[in-house]
Image 1 (cartoon, rainbow, N blue to C red):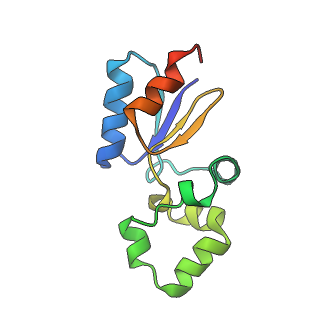
Image 2: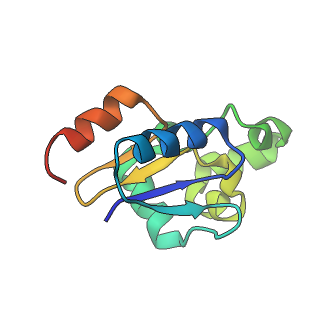
Length: 116
């Protein structure tokens, strides 16, 4: 099963969804703001991707954080990402064998080039 996690209004998420649609790949869409993400999944992403790939320090949410909030996000990213899902670098693509943060047509093509 392929799942794509993001925010409905995110342009990068729209590009990823369009790419998957054009490629004829069935996927489940999860809006992290509307639907949320459970802590176990956030922790798995964190362990797989690491903090630099998962924590979106270019987001408006990050820019709006004060120093204490930023320190908390760096100390306990899973808890903060659960509370502020807009800090998740998006989209997150999950397949049975791969987890990717962000969108790149080349990376998606490589993931789906083999049977997944």
